[in-house]
Image (cartoon, rainbow over all chains, first blue to last red):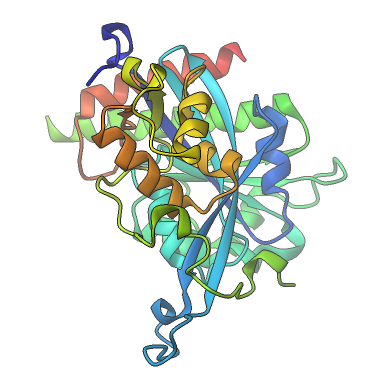
Length: 195
Length: 125
């Protein structure tokens, strides 16, 4: 292509920010992003939901799925994107694209509504995407013990569970660091196991 | 609670008018793939329409991902993908694919090196 030689190694990576509706995903993205979070929309025809047969209808009804995302320039030639998942897990078609090639995911949870993230955790485990659980402490109080949360979510002891304040840049930064460290440690373990 | 944006929004035809109805891109481009205007694109001589001019300007400064292009142009992701793929095929844009970290595939050492760079970048924030 015509791109200058010095940009030939330009690349990007992404981290997925998941969780139930209203848990603070966009707030978390915005706390650390260098741009105001943007929204991108994907369109799906209702026919692909497998419910209605719209073949006879010339104007297929469509559903728009919105995702918020932010950006962190790591280096001139390396940009990290943070993608918030659509609020509702019924839009699995978009989730496939979101998780493809991702470093890993942060599952943001509200302890008052833990059940909201059961399906999300199932999805990541099924797709073998590394994830950690970040408990959003809205009022700065840690109401639940980590072990109780772990038990309620039925996740393995290996999966990191941390407290966070999604509004706080430093807190979000620490959660991102924790996730990347976790992914790196998983890779090292796997390599050791192979040789 | 249901978001307004999740409701059916009518015809599929309208958003795809700028691609003349095509919904399949010439090239699969990831959400986070970075797009850069080439010298040929910057010359402005080969541009096919208003959308192409907007994209060339958008990606002529700093790198923009496909998702950013779609968001800033306020078009659906699929529309941006068709437009960018066409322009890449015409040499107006360069598309830099992301480094994938899928559990089962990819070059392990490249992935590890990149993860380490991401980690030190995050620590510097």
